[in-house]
Length: 185
Image (cartoon, rainbow, N blue to C red; front, side, top):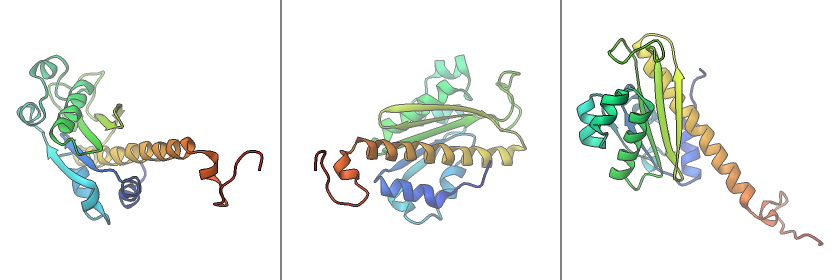
């Protein structure tokens, strides 16, 4: 995975006038912490909550006990509920990101969900974008890779959002020369 362009990501948020909130489990706040040095981050990052333990997921984000029991703390279902709970608690956030995963041996590791499996949910414009990735390395490396994966997916989504906004504009607004043109002129 290439080194993330956090400065560029924050600039994308600023250009699109969007705010961000994070709910971090396996990354333990790393995704938010790495953004701290970026210019303009105080206008973008509303906050991050670290919900490493299931009690914190339940009490701070409203993750259902049944979800944790059925799917485990490290699952797409849990990540989805974390993102929704974050949005409920911080409705001013335009983008809500939740991340869970297995950065070490644990009860929920299986052959189908080995150590390194990471789940991310990004809520943007009323849509939940779900991601599952299998990373490799030691626990610290897995956290670093998970944070980089979040930045990469955010950047991709914001770029697509920007392209969609430009495509939705009338052709007279998109004119490269800056002059207003109309068909038949």
